[in-house]
Picture: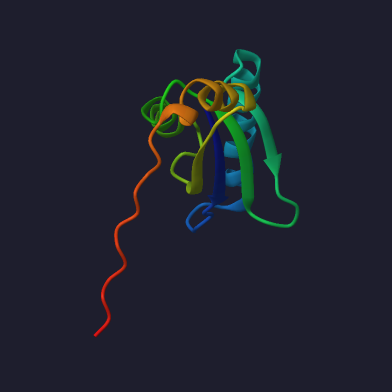
Length: 115
């Protein structure tokens, strides 16, 4: 399963900028390893913002949580602002061909009666 994640750095004292960049170097080592393993499909630094965007492959949201909270050197300094599960086109196409067309249409509730 693919996930879109958007993270923000929280650099707060007593952490110095030099200490932060040392942790970031460690984070890059982990990122390169996860890219080689195929877990990270894309990792992007947003220009002029303390923000990183990634496309991550994980077996489940729990697997993503374990990776984010257990493996990342910056886990205490990263705030996950957005985590969206993504569907690839092939999976979506299979669902449309084999499932969605045969499901009964959802019935919307009746609108409330105004007085």
